[in-house]
Image 1 (cartoon, one colour):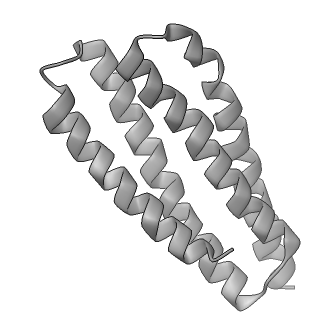
Image 2 (image 1 turned 135 degrees about the vertical axis):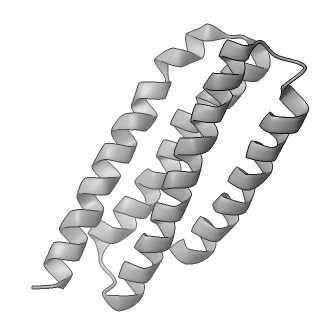
Length: 122
């Protein structure tokens, strides 16, 4: 997979969702739900940008561990940010139980990226 392209596309989606939250949701959802949505966008953007780093690292030294980092960043965005987006739009608070799984995916992805960078610099 081309992680640089994936990161760029997910960054564009993050910007669009941020604009939607700021302009389209402000009058439609409560302030506490808007904060939840904004948290989803913030972590979405952080990790979409992390995919650019994965793309750069894979271009320098392709490895399975770096590809795993990319996969886990995408999984994290879907689970963490996606659950927060859906929770905001539907009010289904039970989705908060899924959010930590995305957080774990992010943590493992960062560890994989660090490991992949360490191994490639040896």
